[in-house]
Image (cartoon, rainbow, N blue to C red; front, top):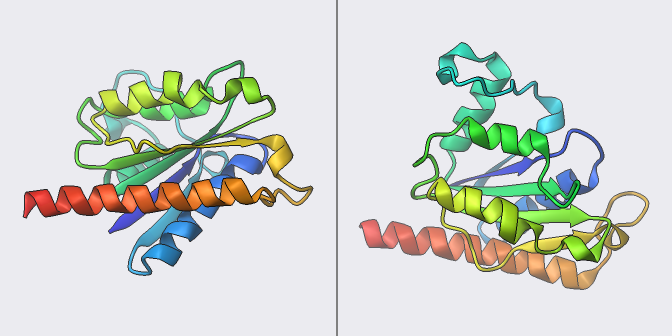
Length: 181
């Protein structure tokens, strides 16, 4: 089983660290899970222009195909202007309608205001379900105050929610796999 974490920000470290923590929690639950972090600030994902994937650069090709090869994808995004990042939305626009069918798609959001805790429900979850991803009931919202100066998560309740998300993603994937067998 392969889990890919996508940090959907082009600046900062909090979102990447949050997604990394989900990967670590998942690995602690099941050491056989292969994990990979895709931090969008490390890739030059081209803007979608309606062409087939083969017409885009190597980074775009790599990121999209890595995600397509995953069994579980956890998406992390900071909240900008009460929405997901443009970089993450652009990446998601590269995928066809059924791209996440059979995949579990978890959500982690970071924000500087508690007022943004529902952004994932109203902006990211509809996109993931449109792409046919199975979205866990648990998502993780992390306020910037939950990080220390080294971008480590210091709120134990957040760490518990990360573990709960990891457990639920694995359970959904295993349950779906059992239904197919």
